[in-house]
Length: 284
Picture 1 (cartoon, rainbow, N blue to C red):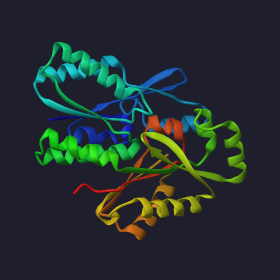
Picture 2: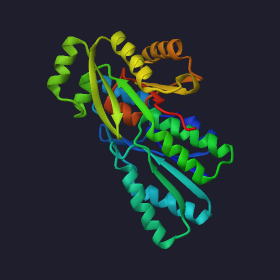
Picture 3: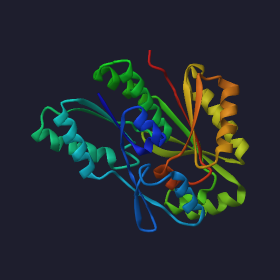
């Protein structure tokens, strides 16, 4: 069985080859030069560009790449599952479905499940890791689809950004809000709701917002001690490790995995972002 994943899952480059997952890279544009995420550019280069005043842009996966992948899958006779970046944050999922339907017209034997994860970053990445685990345990495609859809529906995302100016450059918040936020050391707390980024609270100072994140984890999470919790950061490992220590102290989870936020999401959230991902409910 083949597993397909976008680069917006924020798993490291070596993960894909090691676990036999087909990487589908989104694109990053800096100074009019286009890069394939993970393949052609490391996200630290994106953070460096942002700190130097540049505004990277991102774009979805090309229809041509999906056409090649789905035709190759149909020709192979293998089955596949494509778990996609939230359709509310990218047109990639919709394009994949459009091309899938096109390929089915001439290749009705194409056996491909497509899932709109409504997740981002490691909230999405945890789904990919679970799909790999289930495949390696020889679960069938139907079972994997059911479990991944359940996990996606119960994935919580909580994150804060270091500097609202970065989000203002990308049009995510107003320039006025960013200016005032910078003066007052305001740290917005956001989450993902039905695949969309939604601000929920504002706090003054980094320590306060990190404490509030763990309070919300306690409110929203279920059986956190039995979970693998993921933390991603925008080229600021210190804040990620600070949050990791709080999470381990309060919830004693099975494990806490820390990764760098990739180029596509990092281009919009900026350096200093920190996010945590966990489940509100575990499948029985």
